[in-house]
Length: 215
Image 1 (cartoon, rainbow, N blue to C red):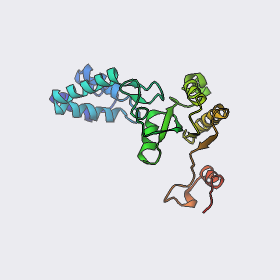
Image 2: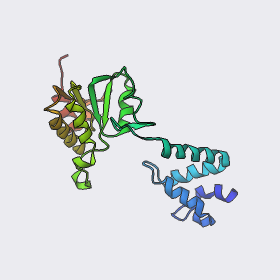
Image 3: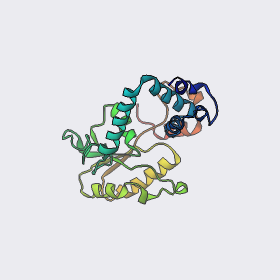
Image 4: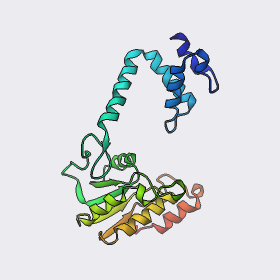
């Protein structure tokens, strides 16, 4: 254990294997695959687990096993769910006439933090990106159209990210919804609260001017 706990200070790709510990190296490589986690951060995580002992590792194993066995996609909106439907879709207090389209499930949590939207969601599972081989068939657009065809949705709120791919996706969704929805809106974006004009880029200023509203 003493040698295993000390690998964090060794540099290079063979840092863990230098101790003759392929199990440690494998754990580091797997953790380093996570978004925003580099090799050094992965080494710290493994170092922490080894210091905490077997109990901490076993708790993590159980949590990951439950994640694999119990969490799936909601059959309605494709949000994460433990069961056939997610906690949003089973909530009778949510307004079915408002539908917010987002790229990923974690975007739902971001919108929910604002605690102002009381409608429902539809998770696309990504955004259009032909260069990466992601077209309409790779997104949850067919199920979105089926939901819109019921006539329940009165306002479709497009909340894709303000990127080139996100804008392309927004336009596609708007065209898809046009025959079925009376009102299609897009999240406003522009000047951030607390920001100063001299530090804003041209695109942000353009969007702020284009999306101006009465004062």
